[in-house]
Every structure is written in C-alpha cells, then in structure tokens.
Image: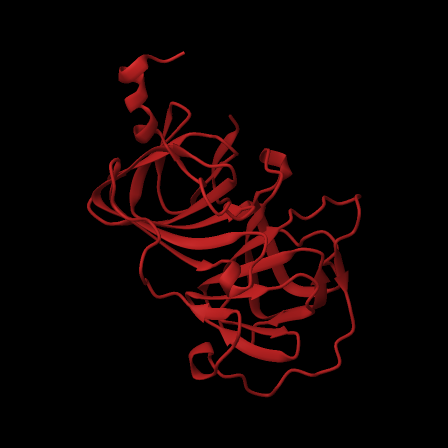
Length: 282
C-alpha cells in the first residue's frame, strides 16, 4: 500500500507555477501531490509576506484554507473578510478570489485542493480574471461579521467516539458537505497523553500535518515518530495506527479526499480480527 512521510522544508517554498507577475510575496510549499503517489489531493502550506497580495483567480477545483500565523484578507465572490489564526474558509470551485496581507507580519496557512490540481504543462486549471470591486478600506475580523463558508476553529463534539482500540482520541470535522465542501473533508485531531488509535484503513486518501506534541504513527508495519512540522499521506487501504508519546496532547490538521461514503468509511481491524479465532484466516 502507498504512503509517504515527510517534514515541511522551508527551502521548498516557491512561487507556484503561473503566479509569477500575478502575485507579490506569495509562495507555497507542496506537501502532497501526484509526486508522492496521491491522485486526489493537492496539500501544501502557503505564505504571504507583509504587504503581499495575490491577484483574482478561479480554480477548476475547490480549496480549503486554515490560517496558522498572521492575518490575510480575502475577497471571495461578492464579499471580503479578514482571517486570523485558527480561522478557515472554503473557496468553492469556480469562485473568483484574491488575497492580500496589509499587516506588519507574514501570514501562513494550510491549503487543501481537490480534485488534485494538474501539473505544469497539462490542462490549465487556474485562471486569473478581472475583478470589478475594489478592496474595502477596512475589513472586519471574522468574528465581527457573519460570513458563509468560513469560521473559527473551536473544539466541538468529536466525530469519533471511544470504542475497542480507541482511547483519548478526538477528531473535529469543520469542512464537510454541510459546510459546502463537495470533494474533501478538513478536520483537526487530538490524541491525549496515553491515547491510542488502533489499526484501521479507509477507501479514501488521508493527509496529516502535525501541529503540536508527539506520537508514533504505525503505517503498514513501519513506525514513524511524528513531531510538529511532520506530515503523512496514506493512500487508499493503507493500514495505520497512532500511539501518543510524551506529556502534551498530540494535535494535527487532517484532510480526506474524496469525501467518505455514507457507510463503511473505516475498517477497524480489531473488529474483524475476532474471526481469526472463530474460523481461521486464509
């Protein structure tokens, strides 16, 4: 089964293909793309320098962004809003959008695109377009105004409940079909000290970017010590498990693409292993 483990490398930041002359101070480091085996995801980290901007563009895919540092102002469709740390927003397929950073510090954010963008030289799926409305002089923070398909991350009811093989795990999904996303899920995960998530797999691809703490992630029989800045991609059917280490909670941002089926999106191995003793394995 395919999987990939890596670490965010500052030297990987570069102006994306097609953005030269259409952006100022904007760079992206690709983490997950077809180069490591993915067929559904385009995952990366973007940064925009103080005073930087990206001209208005549209994508033939949908995109989710999650702010790590600084502030970024967004024009999306007919609205404009400002995102700060732990804010997130969806850019639906074909919706015109632009960015700027009027603050005094660089901004940095997580970026998820699906369907996976085409590589340079293939069919073009990003287009820069005219935009009639100018930037407002002042933009309110996200919490000061209601903005559809945008929000601030606050842990709510987790989507994973404790069961055999799971303890200390909470996963908070904030981009899904009800939010407006059609091609992917985005969520935050947390594993408490002593927590575990037993072996399982999915009929979709997953990505993980470690934010805080430490954990051992076992993938297809190999163990990997994850810390902040490490990232993982697991392909369809790749078995994986987590075990917390250290004293602080292990936290990450996670994506899945395509979206889960209505049922049977996870195969928990401990549920099926009971049949080994009942009738033997083949």
